Length: 169
Ligand SMILES: C[S@@+](CC[C@H](N)C(=O)[O-])C[C@H]1O[C@@H](n2cnc3c(N)ncnc32)[C@H](O)[C@@H]1O
Image (cartoon, rainbow, N blue to C red; front, side):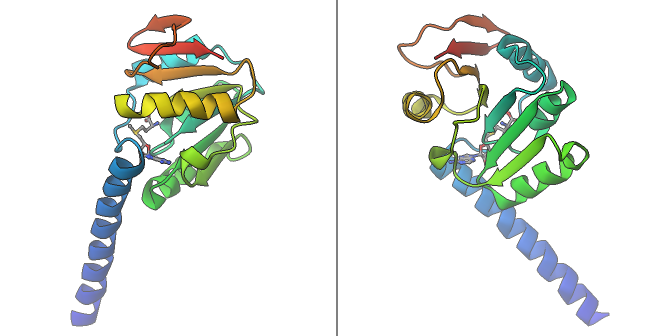
């Protein structure tokens, strides 16, 4: 009985540490975890207007709900996520769509964006200039970007709805 409670306590402690770690790395390297609501997810997908077979990248994919929504529309989806716990959750959440969805546990500032037809982000104001540079240097010409809440300074949105801003590069 004592051994069992010790094991359970250890598991709980590890989970709490992973959660704290996930939150802290999110704040240090990008945005902390906060999921996009379903309405805004659908708006972003509508604005991006990708066709089945095209690929959407979610940079900082959290628990993978945007990847799943994209896969349900017939898109391929790639998610980058720094937190190991959230990356694992995203992978589990998209198990059913595993042929369309890839979850990459890693830093989106080092992402390979060459396959992206569309990119979705929910970051923070202070990262939008850096993000603009990332898209210009790593993504192909013509890529579409949907940013929830935060605008790209100095760039005119091609469309806006429901607090989602669409940009074309
Ligand atoms: C605001 S949440 C958005 C989650 C998801 N895109 C959504 O809209 O539901 C931002 C996510 O980015 C992740 N993140 C922050 N910095 C990152 C980085 N440099 N590389 C990869 N993921 C990062 C955080 O862990 C968090 O899950």
